[in-house]
Length: 277
Length: 333
Image (cartoon, rainbow over all chains, first blue to last red; front, side, top):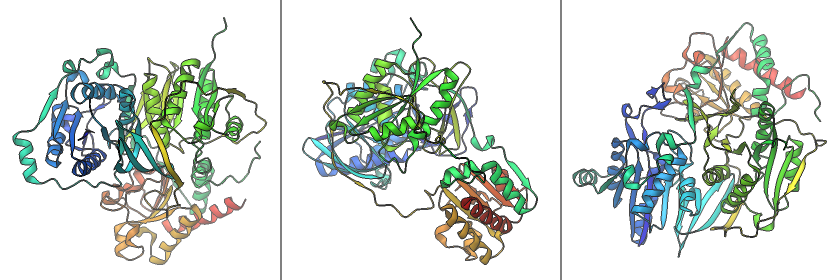
């Protein structure tokens, strides 16, 4: 029996986001949620491994109560059971603390896992850090950005593209992989499955006390990073307006932005070239 | 006892040296930051037969390079490199560690930060020091629609991965002097739990507009199908791709593949040149990840002009022609 864990996150569906300007964090209760796309691909990969190898899937999420929706969806897709880590004490966790919290839950509720699958990054905070940090916390190996997964005997073979290299890697199990959205297109979720998921969801709600979390390593208080402020880059744009004859405008544009354009196209656009070194 | 020298470290990610200059870009930025907190810029290099890179890093601003050179480190290994970085950091106590946000850097840095029990900010597009001497890390979220400024007040080192192309490298100086600290491979290094079975350089993919660093987008304001062709000349000189709005495609001035917009291609160029586009939401929803936008339109109040970094009030085709001429002149000079 291949015991798998899929970590997933609920992310806001909208792009116009309600921000709490005081704390710099997102008012998640005001935004409609969905399962993060890469997490869904990770679940799909797990479901295909389950179909081939007699597997068992535990889906885990951490978030506010409404995040339970993604676990119901996971059950509808074929996950066997779910853990919902939800507690005000966990709120505001950065990636270091999130991975600590997930690791404690895994150690308590599914210590004999073979493989953990995560999405390679989330569409909201986009850090791509929780997967590797969770592996570190559990002292297991990690392969990020996996595109193809094949199970061997006590090991797993992964294909991926890493910095312009096509790599095939073999990893000891237990281990952790993060999946891109290139392959494993998620299956259609049947309505019947959703109905079951809503009738008797196999979801265990877990609090900070259930996990015996160290308060110094929990939630916003335990997080080493602090958000100073959040702003929209479009609002920060200077919006320089140039008017006049096209030739003059273009000359002025290059006078002011030759570095910016030159660095992108990798050409020296300065008219008076200075010799270097 | 003299006060210990503070240091800013840059991880030497040399695997794609010629395509990816992020390590050099970080050395450049680290040099600026180091002046503000009176620190020393160091590079850290793991691998086998890496002296070439050590020399490059000194030429690009590293005052000291820590090197562990061993056949076991020939290919990048997260398990081994993390263990080496942890030991080095615990020994020398750097103030800041910067890692390029390459595929490897994104797998490596989170594990290092976990080992060192410190904060890590992902994929930064800005780094600065504030008046308290803290590293202010600007990181994007929600597809770049939002930027957050993040600090790590209470733990050290302060760690960040940085998006390639964010900073400009400083010109090399092969006269520059730097200290090389050779760190032997520790005896009790952990076993690598991941084995590289095969690795081959990916054949260069045909450039897709979604990945292009420069995109030249055109709308009906270009005037005619013939004039629209000028945009292809401009894109060719810039090494970029041409994008188009829906009306242009309907008028058959451009192929459907070029469609950029909400329901079409989403682009994320470093530079977007927008010619004769008014900026309907159906189009602009596809360009929210563009870093730097230059828009040309006769109408200064067009939505596209309001969201541009530089808004040029003029005829789109005339500016396009002038742009091509000026670009050719400057590339030749």
